[in-house]
Amino acid sequence: QVQLVESGGGLVQAGGSLNLSCTGSTGTLDTYSMGWLRQAPGKEREFVASLVSGGWRPVYADSVKGRFIISGDNAKNTVYLLMNSLKLEDTAVYYCAGRRPGRVEYEVWGQGTQVTVAS
Image 1 (cartoon, helix red, strand yellow):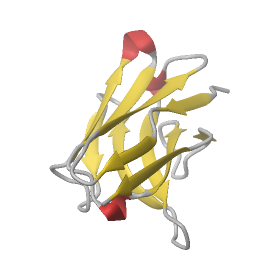
Image 2 (tube, one colour):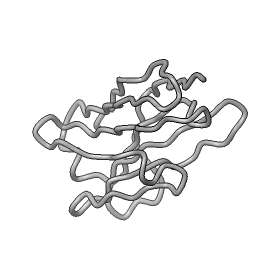
Image 3 (tube, rainbow, N blue to C red):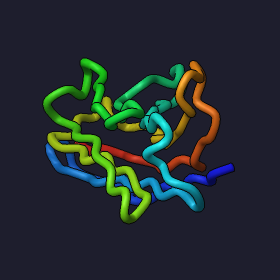
Image 4 (tube, rainbow, N blue to C red):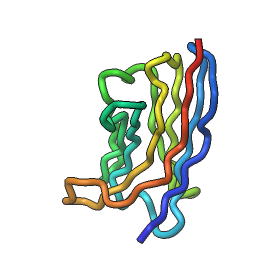
């Protein structure tokens, strides 16, 4: 089963940008629907964005639409999340996850990367 490794988190000022990466150890990520989810302290994990398998169509949560861009590079077996105009409320641990076609739940998860937005 593919293993996912995230990178790119860190501390950023409000209004700044960060670019998260998620690289698959084996296989080809474009056979999966790939998503980014996040969990803030004391809150439920929430959907951020995904690339839907079968063309990798992007889908965004309303809270990040127009600010975040999800993309994929098949040659590098990597999915990215470019986060612009970051807000304090974007502070969370961000997880990359994948699921095969027909599956409802995400099956494989990365370890998570911390994003902290400071005022």
